[in-house]
Length: 196
Length: 95
Image (spheres, rainbow over the protein chains, first blue to last red):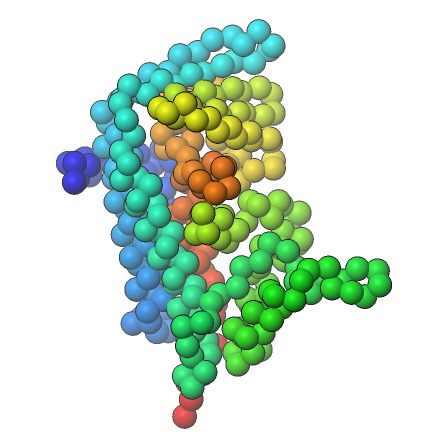
């Protein structure tokens, strides 16, 4: 690939400029099951991310863009970034591959959390932006039954602690605790991209 | 062409694809991961040239029609890693 010619120094400079993290933290932390397929999937995602940022570094080094600045007249500045070269279409493929493997890492973990006799390929890691168990003033569920049914099917044989962690990690739950927008939640972003 | 417009507390990105399709994204102070986590808004006025590729490079969800900063991707990987680490002790191994 063309961007493989990007130098290590240039990659490093870009990484610093965008706040790119180092290796995924789990590589530094003890993995209880280092051969687990969920880690293989996540490591593959990291590989695609490395390729993606190398591609961005290569593009940036070629400086195929110009920036102009002008006063917008309403007290703001208007910056126009003019692309003089096409953005490499590989970016979308690399990002897509990374996202696919991240999603798969969660799904593989969801399967592993079930006892072997209950594992099958219809188990997924649930990601909900709305609380499936929320009720209205009359005690009726606000959301339809599908997500509750799926959640039960995917988690009913898991340890209670695992189910609690998964519920705790749901976008709607974390957004409720933090006051952030549910659409800003990382798992919501993952779901949005993966279902796109 | 990517148009960035920055004011006191908002930033706006308008992407015009070669085929003429347009998408727009606003970042309001404190409401977007792009702003709260990356300081993108603060960087835009002064360092847009140096940082736009890295900080404002966007992914595009074709279905949702929305932009997300690619910067979210490594944070997402880290978040998933932390989730996996938290869940691993609860993997059931049947006797």
